[in-house]
Length: 372
Image (cartoon, rainbow, N blue to C red):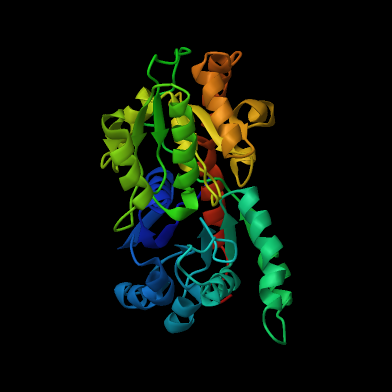
């Protein structure tokens, strides 16, 4: 029987997958979790200064049995400012700045990687959202430390690894109902994009594939969902001009029910990402019955079982075009039955299945000495 603990959750970037995870954990946990947030903008300044905000915002850290933070802030700074009366802490890594790709118009700022390093060292527990992410982080860490001209702190690798685990982020399916029957692909299929409108989701390859399929004479509709943090997302602006009324949704679905409605109407969901450590948006769409086409890289081979790799993973953008043409030509053997099976498999990632691991981890964390 889990003993309820009082846990503080500080989320410095309350949006997207960070928000979904925080809300889900607070809602599903047996523990009493108090959530304190900052808006999802200016991520670089959140890493630099969120600790200063939370230090003044929280009146007393000593009243909590445990603390949760995520990767876009400096736990080391917060811990140093707060002194000894500080609860044992866990950092949940949605992403990390050792392996996150740099935008084309930006240069690498290695300080963000060092903030992740000191945050994971300062925590009593480190949780990654997938085995893919765990492996990528520890593969990159030795080379990252070697960039220092001397006195390489290689001891940090084992220290972090010894307190690290993987727990998949729980997903709430309250609005995304499981399809009970195999559905037919509509004459004019609806293609879903439900990712951030950012460079790391690689919209260029997505629209390249749609252009090639359109040139072959196939018709389709497009729902461009997902959050946009850019002032002028040029690929999407160009696509709106090019596809016109074939785009039936253009922008973020503000309510979860509206989002789920479009997923349930969708026939195909596509990712062309160059950065993805788990893939909540794909899992949600597949659970709603969409046929997924995702790259054979990143976390996708982990969340899509091996038996389905041949059907749903593509090697490059031209291979994606081939798969779409085959599907729209109705020459994909047994694809509907496989999607139905895959949809049921997505239950693996529900909060119902993952919350026990989180609650046990938090109970174990809170039992540790506050003076570690």
